Structures are given as C-alpha cells and as structure tokens.
Amino acid sequence: MEFFGLSETAFRLGLFASIFLIMAILETWLPRRKRRFTRGQRWTTNIGILVSDFLAVSAVTFVIPLTAVITAFWASANGWGLLNILDLPLWLEWLIAIIVLDWVIWAQHLITHKVPILWRLHRVHHSDVEMDATTAVRFHPLEIIFSIFVKSAAILVLGPAAAAVVVFEALVNGSAIFNHANFNLPRPLDIIVRAVFVTPDMHRVHHSVHRHETDSNYGFFLSIWDRIFNTYVPQPQDGHDEMEIGLAEWQDDAPTRFTWAISFPFRNPPHTPSEQSKAAMTEQPQSQDQ
Image 1 (cartoon, rainbow, N blue to C red):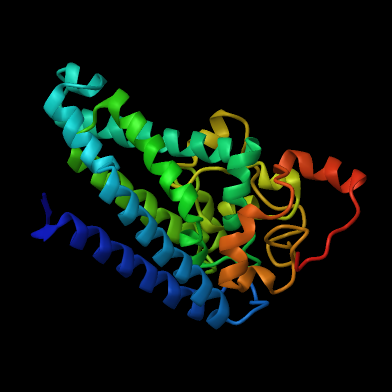
Image 2: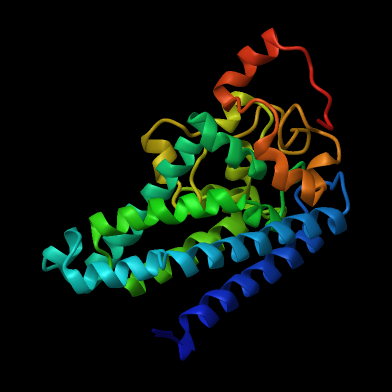
C-alpha cells in the first residue's frame, strides 16, 4: 500500500517526524508555559519509552501478526464488518470509519481512567511533570499492546478499508503531537479550532493534577465526544500558567527518569483519578521516590 508514492511505513514515519519537528520549533519560538525541567532528561526518557513501545509491539506482532492494518486487510478479504456488508460510497465509508474509530479511541481513553489495572498503565502517561510534543509518545508498552487489541476488535466489527485505517492512525498520532505541544495557539484561533478538533489548551486541562480535570477532555482528534458525553471542561481552574501538570503525588524529577517510568505500573496502589481524593484522606503520604 502506497501513499503519495511512499510505503505505508515511510508515509506514517515521515508525517510523524514532520509534525513533531514543527511542534518542537513552535514550542521553542512560542512557548505556552515556562519549563520546570530541561528538555534533555525528559525527552531522553519519553523517546526511550517510544523505542520500548516499538520493540514490544514488534515482539508481539512477530508471535501474533496482529495490527490494526493487518486486521483491516483480513476483515476485507473475509467480508467481516459492517462496512464490508453495506454498499456505501467510498467517501462515506472513510468518513464513517474515521469518526467511529475516533470514538473508540475516546472510549478506550476514558476506560483507562476508570479501571484500576488499566489506570496503572495509563498513569505513566499522566506522570509526566511537563507537557510537550514528547508527552504524546509517553505510553507504557503494555498500554500500546492493549490498544492494538482494542482497535483490532473495533475494526473487525466495523470493517473499514485498510487505507482508511492508515490515514486514521496518522491523523490520531499527528493530532496527539499537536495537542500535547507546549506552544501558544492564540485564543481566538483556539476557540475556532476546538469547535471540531482537540487543541493544546483543551487537552492540557486533562493533564491537571486536579481529579475533576483529569477526568475530562479525553479526546485526541475530534473534540465533539467530550461535549456529547458531558466530559468537557473548557479551562483549568488554576489557569494555564499556574496549573500543575502530572500526578499530585509525584511532582519531583522522578517521572523524568526512564527506569522510574517503565517500572511505575508495578509499584504503588493503582488508584484511578476518581479514587485518589478518597485515598488521600485515608492513606499516609508516600515518599515521592517510592
């Protein structure tokens, strides 16, 4: 499968690298928030996690050849999925595929906040004490593998074309880099863009230390789902300049270390954001380096 004369892998990698480079430049020229830590340690850790994700997924798919795109090819060849049954115009099939798969990712994200064992993995992402383009790739390898199975199951039910899946994943990955980026999108433009798409200011609320804000703004690409399901919070209560990002229990430099981040799911009680306030009332404060 080729896109603009490039293989699927080259297309996705090239788009990812291009968007990342643009966001990194904008973060340097137009920063939204002052940095608490230098880029060096955090970027090394977050990119190290990305490399770990690639290695883990490669190992799993070597044993079980399962990816979203492979599943889409299989579903098409075997007539699985709603879109392989219905005779719809190509443009409508693609539109439905992108919208439905984006909702699936939104729902998966919400569930990772509500189920303790999944939050144990997802909190690696939320433990980042700063938020920039590299935060978009700070997902524990086990969460990435879980996501592959979720997307593959959705694709079996929906039956989108493999090309549509490639484009969707490129859109979601690119938008994640964009909405995690630490650059100043002018407020009037932010208001216009967030009417349809998730913006950095919108998603930053989700990375707040406050529970009611962490339990909001789950979208990565389209902003409509949080409005529809009443999980939308427009602005952080402490303001974008003063708000604390990350997990309230770990506000030191521990989350900037690779070994700490990779081992984090296997240590400490896996309280979901909804349980943390109650836990704070019943448990003694823990050392931040535990």
